[in-house]
Structures are given as structure tokens and as C-alpha cells.
Image (cartoon, rainbow, N blue to C red; front, side):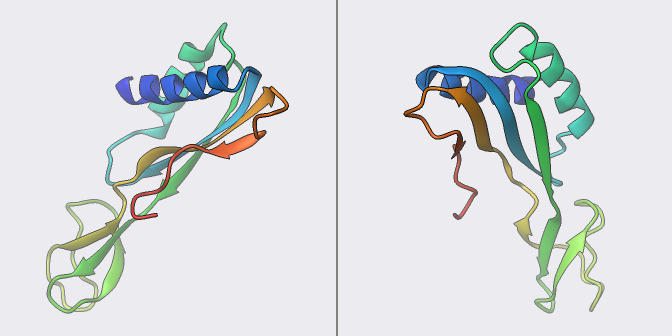
Length: 128
């Protein structure tokens, strides 16, 4: 729930700052290595947004796969989780995590204040 509460706080603060009448859509980026479960986020999102400016807002979740660069041979590959980081080329375990740790609100779409953009990116992706 703390993750979803943080998402909700970011969204409602942005909406307030831009005099929004309502929030239409929120896009959240979640890396597979974070351990954040989409179903849980959706469940708590529905609960938190009831009776608020974000009620009925579409929650879009973009998943980022765990990508690794092998320490042994340099091959880049996708792994299911941190326990399955065996290089498909040399079978070396582990490597540099290239993606999969992301967790941020990417965009918020609002209705209301004509001076505010209807859609805005509110967070830069790591390294972006």
C-alpha cells in the first residue's frame, strides 16, 4: 500500500497544482525487479481514489523487464527474476542490472485548468 499511496499523493498534488477538475489517466512504470505487484497497486488505487479527484481515473501500468549484462562474457539478456540471472551464453550467474528497478509515475492526464497541459510527464526515467 505505501507504493500506491505515494502514487496517489503525486497524482493528487499535481492535479491540485494545476487546478484540475479530474484526473483522467495515470501511467506508472514498474520494473520487474521492484517486487511491486500490479494487482495490489490496482486494488489499493481503487480504494484510495474513491470520492477524490482521481476517482475512475484509468491506471496504466508499464512493465519493464529485468535486463542484465553478464559479468562473465558481456552478453545482455532478460531474466525472469534476480534468482534466474544465468547468462544464456556462458551460464555465468549474475551481472550488471540494466533495467528492471524502475518505479515512477510517468504521465498524468487531467481535465480542468486550460493553462495546464492535459498530459504531462512528471518524472524522468532513471538515467533519462
